[in-house]
Length: 171
Image 1 (spheres, rainbow, N blue to C red):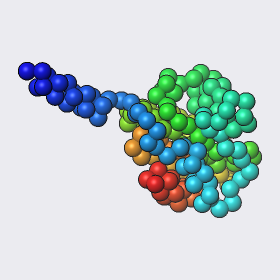
Image 2 (tube, one colour; image 1 turned 90 degrees about the vertical axis):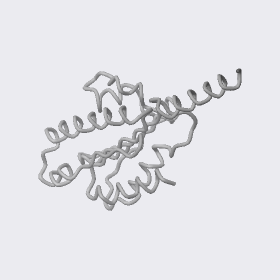
Image 3 (spheres, one colour; image 1 turned 180 degrees about the horizontal axis):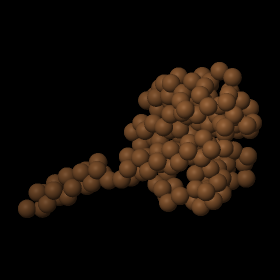
């Protein structure tokens, strides 16, 4: 009688782990590696800086809550950040709107919410970066979800950058 109950319990645990909105373990490509792969294929990459949530606090590459708030939350930390497992980005230090952002979320729903943040970010960039030389880059920007990764690409060649991201994630 104990065996069927134990088997039932194991089956319930397996199903709950398959369908829950969380990820356990470290079985993912670090977001910084994906961002580096994307920037490596960008021709004419402007001077910029990489940021990563996994960098040590105080490191120039560390993504602070205030940086995330200013980029994605209009000064307020977006609620979806509670569902971010990893986050990395490349920001241009010049006036260029060139950005590469990769965020690994706990689940697909959180990745979709993060993609919505990216669309809001693009809307804000369209208002602030009005120089004619940037219009094509902004219009061709890419917001993509791959598994639980949300990806924002604002570059001269987002198609090539997205291919590089897919290769990096599937390694």
